[in-house]
Length: 254
Image (tube, rainbow, N blue to C red; front, side):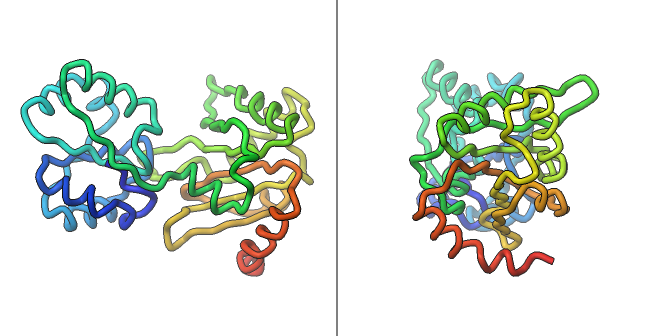
């Protein structure tokens, strides 16, 4: 069951189905706050049991065995089947004869493309910037940025999500990791004068959209659920749309 971006995005149809099921929520691949869980629990009229990564990966067999005996609803942030974990669970359920029905909802991917004001058909392959550690600093996401740039396509960039803090990488971390990749590969894509679209907390009251230069973005201390876009050369209709959509946000920057 897709629960969308905010607590009010889950469809009426999905809520009705949940009323006749045991209800579980997967809380580690995307934002799923206690506020959202509480709201959906009230709407469904029953308790929602939270599941962590091990429940649906190492111990997926136990969960699926339960589904053979009972009607079960699994709530997922955003839209179902976007994460590899959900696809694998879907496949394994069918293998053991458990019927599956998917109820879709809004996704950060489609929402980000729409809210950006950019042409959906001009987006290339998307990538994810991971959280770096002392021994883990993969820069492979830069290959995607380079290929998209060479083909004059927009790059949608997801940021690593932390289920403990309920947030992605901060804007500062994301730009820092992109700059490290630029130093390594020297593709001329990430530089102070490059345009960047910043989409923060889409679907929430704290939603923010910005169209800036990277050197301007580095001055902002933004945390939350952040998605970035490195735009290609803008078409005229894209320029007009962005000018209309982002003006009031720009005036709010201090």
